[in-house]
Image 1 (cartoon, rainbow over the protein chains, first blue to last red):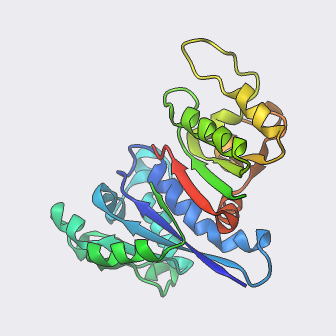
Image 2 (cartoon, one colour):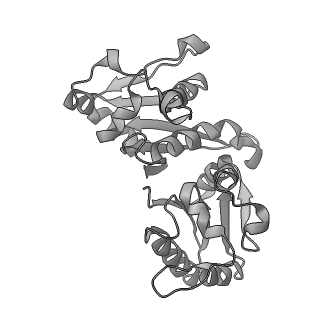
Image 3 (cartoon, rainbow over the protein chains, first blue to last red):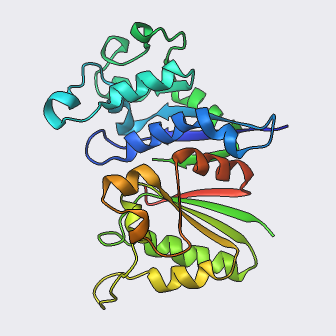
Length: 137
Length: 120
């Protein structure tokens, strides 16, 4: 019986390519990974948005209106809905003049209890040290 | 011997990230390790069969087939990413698997090392 933590570090811009979206969907797929694992084994992903990646978290994305696709905001809400840990770098938000009012922190409208957290980079760095495998997107 | 899981996102043509991932896989196999290569996003183009080798473009079908023949190399393509690009099972190199993203996470679970190459 083992648990492995996977760090998904998202530093790429939203909508320039599909990398940040794929990072989130891969993390969410942890919900069904059990079918490949032995009983009791599990995978716990954490999502960290740093650098330009914090722009993925901006509220009010209109991807459906402009591209006809689901928004990254919706994917982050889905991640919160399945109780993934989501961390957003405080310093990088400030670099863009963004505050907690500007970013997705919850998915209460879907009944999610889990909330994203705005944390100092030192906190994220500590998480990077703790995970079993680390991937930068 | 160790197991290496490599995730890739870049396309076959237009980036050399896949070339690097394939070369790294080959080097790991030659050292006796096993490799899971996960193709997601544009990297699913690597799974397409009938790649024609031009000198100006990457053509990785042959080295992939050679690695598959070792029995210690698995190449698995994201099913949704493939279908979205019109790459169906019949279009793929023989021996390449198609799975959903959770397969990749399970591969990460059992890997000694995980590398994401070409996240662009």
